[in-house]
Structure formats: structure tokens, C-alpha cells
Image (tube, rainbow, N blue to C red; front, top):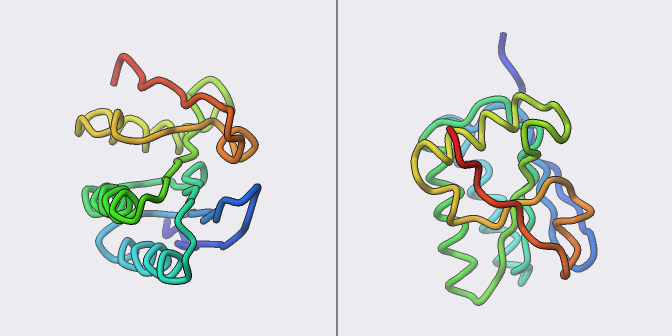
Length: 133
């Protein structure tokens, strides 16, 4: 079954929100990279990537996340990811992305939040990385 890839723009509390859904793979990841670069080129340096509707993520998708982190750090920007924990929204898809990031040892590089409300809240504390993969 083919799942359509989509990136939707939004704003929340001074953050640019890119809602990503579908599969992040070799074919679709360049679109996300382009959207991030476009936002940064427009001067938007506080970005939330909502990955709660991503059903699959391969190494090219992870590469885009790492490149986005690097790009935003280079311009003193900030990146936050939305990846609900397994028990929070009972969302196996988001748990998949968490597992991929954990298995590759890069989950700790990102500030991860359970939902948009906390991701856009300056006082919110990121979720800790899962202790098991």
C-alpha cells in the first residue's frame, strides 16, 4: 500500500511547523529538505517538524533530520521534533521513527516533544530518549 507523502506548513507561537506525513525515504526526503531550506531562506529559524504521521523512515529520512539540525545550528536556529512516545497516543508509526533514531544512535541529538502544544512552549522540557529500542 502506497502512503502519500505530504508536508504542510503552519505557525505556532513563533515556531514554523512542518507537519510531515507518509514515508520519509530516498524519493520523498528531498522534498522535506527543500521545504526546510525554503523556510530558513525566508528567515524562519525556529522549526518544529511534526513527524507524528510519518509511517516509515529510512536512512535518507534520518539524513534530512540530521542535516536540518546542522543547518539550524549554523544560523543559531532551533529545531524541535514531535514524536509521540509509544504510550502517549498509541501511535505505532511515530514509535517506529523513535526506534529508528534510537537504533542509529542519533535520537539523543534532537529535542523531542509529544505534541505541538508542548513543542511550541518555550518552558516545555523535551522527552528523554527511550532506554530500549
